[in-house]
Length: 285
Image: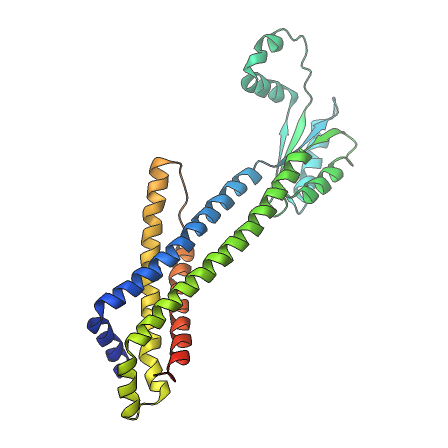
C-alpha cells in the first residue's frame, strides 16, 4: 500500500498539468450537477413553504358551547394527520377581517352585530398535506354536528400536488442526464491519464508487475482526483450560491450531508472511471 501511495503521488508531481486538468474537469462536471441540485433543493424548500399554508377551516354553528368545542378539539388533535388545532372565536374572526381587509373598514364599522362565525383552523403534518389526505380530514370534520361548513381550497391543493409531481419527474430526468454527462466526462479525463502513462505500464509489466499491482495506483489516483474535483465543485457551487443570494433572491445552500454527498460522488465516479479505463486499456498497452 505504501508503494501504491508513493506511485500515485509521484504521478501527480510528474504530470502536474494533466492532474490539475483532470481535477478541474471533474470539478466543473460536478459543478453543473451541483447547480441543478441547488435548484432542486430551493424548489423543494419553496414547495414545503407553500405546503405549510395548507389548512382546513371548519365553521361552527352559532351558539355552540365552548365546552363542546374544547372536547372536540382534543378528538381532532388525535387524528394522525393533524398537527395543530386552533379555535378562532367570532370576535377574533372579525378583528382579523378588519386587520386584513382594510378596504372594507367602513363596512365593518357600520355593523350592528358580528356576522362572522367561530371556526377551527386545522394544520396538517408533513406528508399529510396532499389533496386526498386533506379531503379525508375535511370529511371527518363534517361528521361533527356543530360544524356548519368546511373549507380547504381543494383546487389550489390539487394544483400544488400536480406541481410537486411535475417537479419530481423533471428533476429526476434532468438529474439523471447531468449525472450521466458528468460520469462520461470524468471517465474520459481519467482515460486520458491512463493513456498518458501507457509507457510506464509497459515497463511495469516487463519487470513482472501483475495487473492487480498496476491497477492500484490508477484506482487511488482516480479516487483522489474525484474527491478533489468534488471539493472544487462544492466551492464553485458556494460561490454561485453567494452571488444568487446577494443579487437575486435569498437562496438555501446544501446541507452538510448533501455537499459531503457530492464529494463522495466524485470519489466513487473517479474510482469507477479509473477501474473501467484501466481494465479496458491495460491489455492494449
